[in-house]
Amino acid sequence: MNNITQHIIIIGGGPAGLEAASSLGAAGYKVTVLEKEEQTGGKLRLWYKLFPDFRPSAEVQEYLANGQKMNSPEIITKAEVISITPEIDYQKVILADGQIFTADVVLIATGFQVFNAEKKEEYGYKIYDNVITSVDLEQQLKSGDAVKTVAGEIPQRIAFIHCVGSRDKKVGNIHCSRVCCITGVKQAIEVKEHLPKAEIFNFYMDMRMFGQNFEELYIEAQQKWGITFIRGRVSEIAENIDGTLQLKAEDTLSGRPMKMNFDLVVLLVGMVPAVGTDAIGKSAGLAFTAGNFLASNDTHFNQNETHTPGIFVTGTCREPLSVAETLTDARAATVRIISWLRDKELKSNN
Amino acid sequence: MGKLYDRLNQDIRFIEGLNGCMNCGVCTAICPAAEFYHYDPRVICDTVQSKDEKLIEALLRSETIWYCGECMSCKTRCPRNNTPGFIIMALRKLSQELGYFTDSEKGRQQFAIKRAIGENILRSGYCVNPDIVSPQMHPEQGPVWDWISRNTPEIMEKMGSNYKQEGVGGMRTIAPEVLAELNQIFEVTGCKTMFETIEKHSKHKADELGIEISDEGIGNEYFMTVFTDNNGTHNS
Image 1 (cartoon, one colour):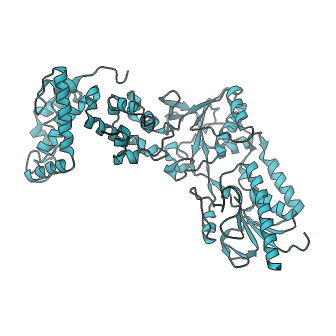
Image 2 (cartoon, rainbow over the protein chains, first blue to last red; image 1 turned 180 degrees about the vertical axis):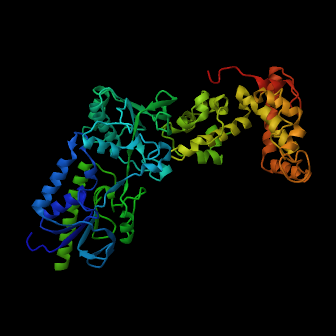
């Protein structure tokens, strides 16, 4: 472990980047995190509570901050990477302001951005006041105030619409964003806790309860909280004259088209790769998945290495992942990076 | 004859229209026909992709495939880029070819459409024009239509159309060489064959029911029967 001089640059200071920075720092490597925002933490900062156990997002942020304190990686904020150039023995990283960094390894952890719900115009986001996204709702819940309509009234009937921007060729995203199903269950329960008298409906295509305790929470939502799940993709939302919203769907399990009125509609927006990931990936000659995420060089054995030696990927820049999965993925990437660097050192010594 | 599914799969509209349906129901949720009829475009997709020959034959003989208005709203919404409206077009064509359309009340109306609009366009160059839409046959047009049809030349002149005149403009007489070209288009594209097929099966049905049918035009009992019959079950 002594005398390690090898240097790793991590692009992105969200959960994936910070967790990898801590692990690599603990292993004795010199680590630099380049974060384009003014603060690290990524999208975790937008979230109030996490599924499936309603753990405050702040706790995970605190955990990541502790990792930084113990292993003190170099963190540079407001550092927007525009390209990576693979050289023969090192990687060259160029920032938008012209600064150049070099490192033995680059780990890309640029994460995701939330699907822009305005692209699904038929759902009326930014057209109808009482259509909000799951991120907007998270902010409302975080503020501690009761969930309200724009007119300041307590909503009596609330709809959650699944798969907004996911599994949808019409917006160019055929991938499943994975976390929205369980987010819909979590948020429906949170709203019901705030507003016990409200009727809450979730409109879904499939409920993909893949994680530990996800299915249990789904059952709890139905049995304990009385939340209704209707299997049907919503075709469109229109605003009534009183500001309420009329929603059209088919209840596919009973085979009938239906129209229902709601006071508030929450769009469960999916994940797309963060802005800039595309340019960075292309600059380094990396491959992409169908959903334009960064592709790994092996689906089963090596999800964190790319086709370009010395460039690694982790977190939601390579596929939609939960926070827990992201942290696990970051640690897995760490192991691959360490063994890759040791191999390189052995070869250069021989 | 081959399997029905294989025959559907030779139709470009079917190939384009069905790309693996996951039954999300968004097509039915946007479908105007589904609001009024016993019609569910999602179920159409589900039935044809089952490749069940019996179910597909039942569909070809059903009222169901004739409820769609081909507005293509479904095309705008499907997250898998399916188009139930295209599938309906392929089903209707196969139903015409096999003569199954005469098994349903809505399907038998193919004969009325062929005799009215189909013959109008070849004869006059217009699918529909004011002289063709008689108030007796179209009470849904309301009492004003009766007045318009009695004063058509004067009204058309006042509206600035070139009614029944040569040259350019709306309502003009279509030139004989244009009509000849239209006829030829119908010939080479197979529309005439389709017309003949509809005629053949409709005549067979009329004979079976013992209803008088003529060789052309709308002045026959079978036309009036298929034009006006309504068993009242389509949207109840």
